[in-house]
Length: 335
Image (cartoon, rainbow, N blue to C red; front, side, top):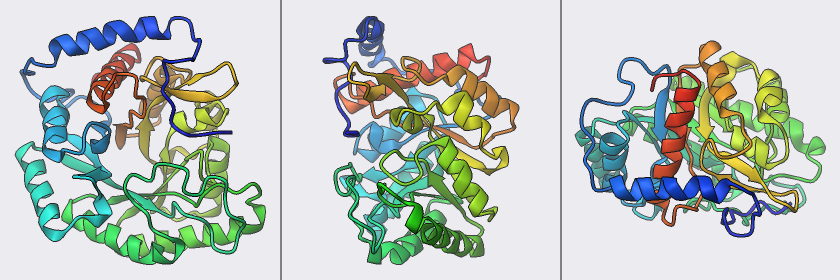
């Protein structure tokens, strides 16, 4: 299965999707010059830390923060790359500049969205996913992972967050011979994070060895460390053909979900998948958000747009954020 990020509108043959998106693009274009008034969205009422991954908007970090804070009315942002650098490659001066921008816009950081363990597992056959995916301006081989973890721990202190996102190596055709060793490496990393009271978040990612709710549940069961939690991404699970909600979600230990990425996917005639604005795809986000609230989840729900149909990353993110807020409203959640 080819998991490369493709343009969603052209060639999908999905009746109604383009019709749905077109007026949203016009609406965003008409309102982009307006300044939002009033307080932060959902201030004091939203059960989640509603956020956006900064580089899904733009590499201009100050511009991204302005949009998240002023236009979207949020208090939280997720850090992955900025100024054409992965967050783990920022210089001391760039870190300080970023801190000042965050303070100016009164934004808090949900987590360091690092590329930790997004590499080939040593000694295993080379994964078909190796180096084919967008690594968001990061390229760290297997030998650099321990050093990368220490860098992420340092960044948590710099940006006053307690969470580091990680993966579990590029997806193998048969991971069974290596699964126990991979789990041991994740366990070791979680124990290191525990020493600094940090949480290691494993993202289910379709190009890595944990992609679905079913696979995530198995890994969480194998690694009981309370500082090892899941970055639940229903869109990634859907892109691999599973049903993230309700099926995958039902299997997850709810007290081990420490972060949630929000994006949507659509089916294509060739039985593959592509990205869509939140609420315009196959993920039951209304049900998923209602269940997260019911189950006491109170960490970040972070928009990871991925969809490119708005013409620019900023426009696409504006449209998808509009879809997310409408979906929250449909779920009866005030944010």
